[in-house]
Image (cartoon, rainbow, N blue to C red; front, side, top):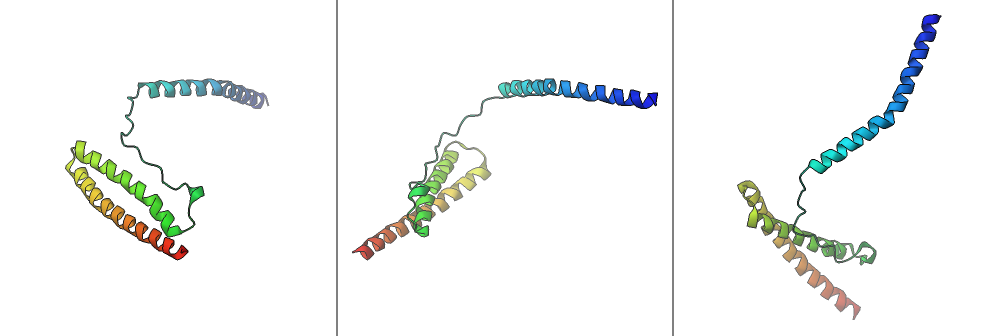
Length: 129
């Protein structure tokens, strides 16, 4: 019986010590993480900003095709800008080849979407007359 009481008492002491130490350990881990973050070199933000879609979601036209094109054109223009920045400064041949492909493909997509957009807007205008 005495062994059981001692074991229970020891378990209670261990549990209490863990309970008391937990906040101290957490604080030490947080301080260690903050120190590590301060020691990390700063990462430069991209120099090319991605434009916001021209039509906010709330102001969408309700025409799914037109809304898609209106949102995709600025997104693909931003992609082309990033790829051109890679072609200006990048050194890795594989990534440069990828950037060239992106510029070519996305510029083609943009041209198709702008052409469609112009026709669609013209068609909508003629239907309203």
